[in-house]
Length: 433
Ligand code: N7H
Image 1 (cartoon, rainbow, N blue to C red):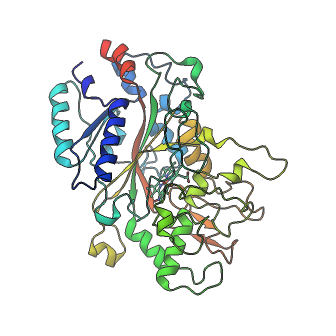
Image 2: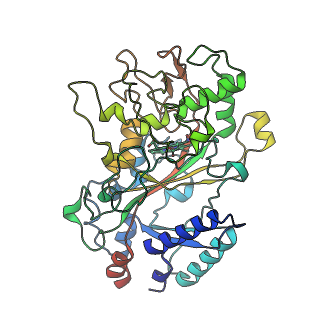
Image 3: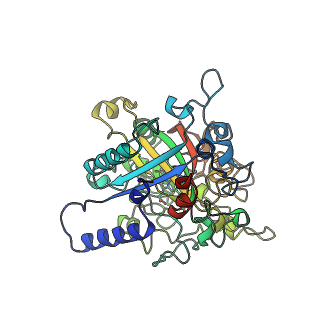
């Protein structure tokens, strides 16, 4: 198969990373021309290819069911007739696979896409192409609400050379199938060894509405009782919704004042655990996005008599990218979204149930999670990704039980569960067929 040599191997990714690090160290101008290609298949795709994927996932796994059917469990809004999720039309068709192309600029990715198109010509039908972009200038690395992203991803034992202080590293099998720690090790065959599940979500963000909400609900005082300017009050409210300041600094370490140096220091910016905050949301609300999606000591060091949860089994490797334009002046003035933008959310793990689905369904959408918080009031939904009628407590550090109703700032418009096989897995099965 002529496509296989185009897939980027792990060895090549590591080489490319070293080249980027070297380029940065030498402070050389511009970007190195490079691209990466990967391919993943849905269950429907394996069926279409006549490939037995029973070693990839058990029959009841969300991978087999597919994300469109699972969307009801994820809380995605339904279409007017209630029959389908309210998704973009492309995602309501069967998606058999996805080809991911990365590169230093559109010229590079367009060229690579043309090369791939020539190989497949009419043998595959393109359902949709979605273009992702990093944000410009100082916003590079920040998602559309303005927060630095991609900070807390799991370190993988035997793979990562540098392990920064933070949550415990995970076994390789939490991220890569067929390795130690893979919950479905017993069923793996060639196709399903050294691969990973890719959960893709097409998430639109209502940025002007989010900014307006922060403006209207700016906190008057911080936790020390100091009076805040409207700008400071908005920034603190946003930081408490996310659990980090826009700079990336965790509020558990710097609760009432941003610390941009901390935000970008990888040796410090993930070194927190909500320790000493059991049953307290003074520094960080229980529903704050990073506390909901990785509760750290809340579950790992629970109150006496409660068995600890091993959170290393529930980590995901996030690899998303932004899409859509910057907010325009007209949108800023009106506080209304006029152009689609958001996050092409992509995460990898060896179990959709223990990873993405648990985080979205059981934690983010569940107002009662985390269970050892305040006995009087549930923490509320995740203010960023929780689906349902959103409200949460703990946003005001001086009134921890007062509740605030939140708008809907992130809207799912599509997605699918895919499996990304290794190159040898593809060679021994799909490319053989
Ligand atoms: Fe989240 N945001 O800007 O508010 N996320 N996320 N996420 N997210 C994180 O630590 C964001 C989404 C996780 O270990 C940060 O890298 C937005 C989904 C997890 O501390 C920021 C969207 C799911 C973590 C955002 C979105 C998750 C995390 C802090 C959608 C899973 C790490 C930066 C548009 C179901 C938690 C960082 C930890 C961090 C934002 C989606 C999960 C700023 C805007 C769908 C596990």
